[in-house]
Length: 493
Image (cartoon, rainbow, N blue to C red; front, side):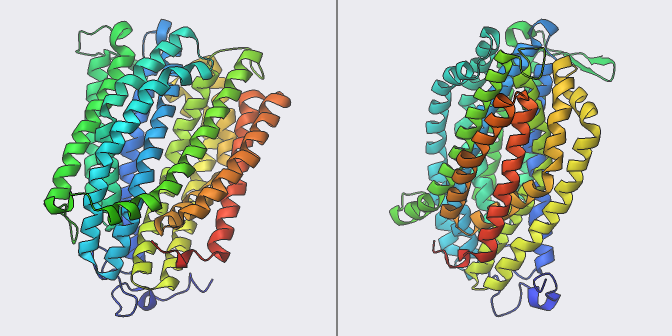
C-alpha cells in the first residue's frame, strides 16, 4: 500500500533525482503521465479494433446465401490478422524499450538511432510476414475444418490483406516508437484516419448492403457482393494500412518532442539493430506461442463442430467463436492501454534510475485496468444476447456467443491483471520471463483444459471458452508473482 500512498511530490517526474529528462513526459506527475499515455492509446486501439469489427460487420451483412461462409472465412482470416500484430509487436517492442530508456536518461541521440533502425526493419519484416501469410492462408483454413466455401473466402481475405502488411508494419512499429517517447496523440490521430478509410473503402469495394435497426443502408457501388464481397472487405483494410503508413512516416520525419526520424539514422547500425532484435525476439516468440496454441484451439472447435457437441449445428461454431473474440477484444483495450502506459512510463523511470517509481507506475496502471475491465465483464454477462445480435442474427451465434461471453466476463479482472502487468514488464525489457510464463500457461494449462472441458466432457465451444478463461486467470497470477518478487528492474538492454 505504500506505493499507492506515495505523495504527489515523490511521484513528480520533474524532481531532480530520478527525473525523466526528455520527451513529452518530462516534468509531469505520475498521474498526469499515465493518462497522457493511456487515453490516446485506448482510443487508438478502439480504432484498430474497429477495423476488424467493420470487416466482420460487412461479412455478416453479405447476402444470406453466402454470409455464414463469409463470416467463418473472414473470422479465420482475422485470426491470421492477429499474427500480423504479434509479428509487428515483436519487433516494435525492441525499439520502444530502447527509446523509453533513452528518454528517461536524456540520451535523445540514442533514441533517434533506435527509431531509425526500427523503421528500416519494419518494412523488411512486413514483407516477410506478408509472404508468410500468403502461403499460410489455405493450410490454416483446412486445419480449421472450414467448408469449401468458407475456405475459399478465407484464402481470398488473407491473400488480399497481405498486400497491405508491409505498410501495416511501418504504421504499427512507428506508433510503438512514439509510445516509447511518451507521444500517444499522433498514433491515435493516424488510427482515426485508418479507420475512416477502411470503413468507406471496404464498404464500397465489397458492395455490401448494411442492414441495421430494421433499415437497409444502400451502397452506391455497382459491384456485386457475391463476386466482390470478401475481396472488397480485405482490400479496404489493405488500402487503409497504406494510408496509415504514409501518415506515420510524415509524423516521424517532422518529429515530436525529442524524437525525429533523421535520414542519417536509416543506415544499418549493427549494434543498435542487435539491441532491438535481442529485446524483440523473446516477445515475438511469446506472441507466436499464444497464436499457435489458439490455432490448436481452433482445431478443437472444428472437432466440436464435426461431433455436434453442445449444439445441433455442425457449422457456425467458428463464427460464434470469432464474434466472442471480437467483443472480448473491446474489453481488453483498456488493459492494453494501461499496460502500454505502464511499460513506457516504467521504462523511462528505469532510464532515469528511479526503480521505486517504475514499480509504482506498473502497479497503479494495473489497478485502474482491473477496475475498468471488471466493469466491462459485468456488461458481457448481462447483455451477451444484445451484443451478439449487433453482429449476427444467426441462431447458432445467438445461442452460443452469450454463453461464451459469460465465461469471458467472469474472468475479466484476472485478464486485466495478466495484460497490464505483462505489458508493463515487457515495456522494461523483461521479455524472457514473459516468454517462459506464457509458454507454460498456454501449453501446460490452456490446451489440456480446453480439450478436457470442450471435447472430453462434451461441453463444446462453451467448455473450450471456460478452459481458456481459467488459464488466463492462472497466467495473470504468475505475472503478478514475477512483478512482486522478480528482479525485472535489473534487466539490461
